[in-house]
Length: 147
Image (cartoon, rainbow, N blue to C red; front, top):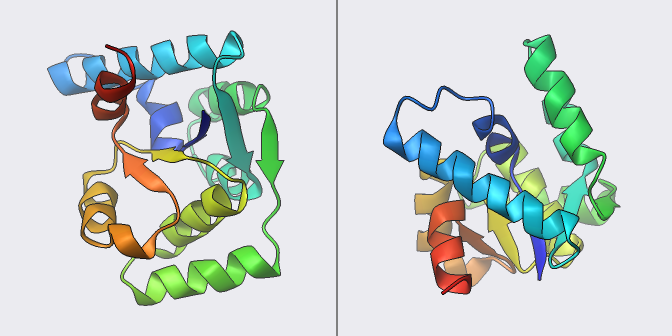
């Protein structure tokens, strides 16, 4: 299984676990990382992830996210094809960075794009037929793949 994790998934590990949803998502992401570390799943990242992490104003969160991404299996470069696909996705209503991330996930052959961003999830569900990658919340996806 080839996975692309949105930056919000990386950041979820540092969010305040006081809310049940945040705690459950962080637990799900930890489990996903355990499976990745055991080479059961392949993690696809991208230059777009690196750029977005670099914009995080919190140095500790930025450092942790960079350490996590260092363990990815494959990093997609943002080239002409990814930029063109991202532009198509933006015309459908995705934000600029979301479009780039989705384009990179598609280009990298990810089977699922994991995100905790509700707006992105809703839009991806509505436009599912226009995407070449399945977009899911980590909890929802884990419930489907781990009985």
